[in-house]
Image 1 (cartoon, helix red, strand yellow):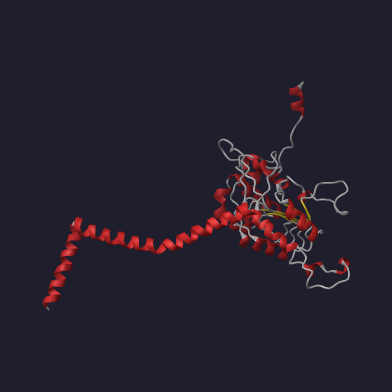
Image 2 (tube, one colour):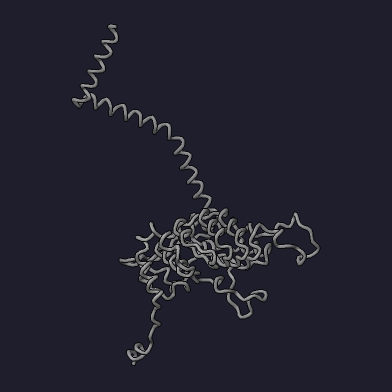
Length: 332
């Protein structure tokens, strides 16, 4: 009976387009040097599917995402990638219609990059940031080692200030009369922020100072203040999953034994400052010891030259020739 039920249950066969994208994805490492020429004629949906595969294969960086970016994109998932502030700003310049962006677990993105994003994308409604652990049934977490990302949480904390209204320089008799564009530094249309690791203190302060933005909204049949929570703002989802749902997961699967999924929570603001102190202390020590290292290098070079002159025939010849030259000059 069970085998009969399994036979009845059939999965939908992938389309020819999905099979072709899968072939490209499997050989993406070899295609990256020529990706600009290969992808220039691809439509936007194929480009974003390749970007999703590149992210899962840990190949997504500034160069790759800029070669694939299309001005019709409405969502952007660069989570756990090597994309930096430069790449994010360039994408924001090209893709002004972005509605949802995921920058969670991005170590190379700072509050400056987020500021560029919200200023250049007036339609941005959902921002996923900080450290977020995807649901265990998602394909993106298979064969992947997940670690905490303090830099991403730091960026999320600092970026919240971009969305808080500055009421000191505006005039108005009521909240309804205030122009949102005049009291914020961007992100006028931003409505949802997903940051599961936000501390209760930050959440309470931000919610009281910026009630128009909801952090970590929970799906509800009644919505939030009359607005239905979109899928992009739902917790535990992967933003670009629907883009590659018809593509064989083996396209980006790692070979060998799956890695153990390890989560290191990071919720304290002090831990980042300690890490930064260690980095600064190391940089200061490196600067202080630089002259000593240069002196040791010169001594090592002189010692090597002396040994070369004493131990090799060529060196002895050079030394004798130098002595003979000095004697002849002394006689003259």
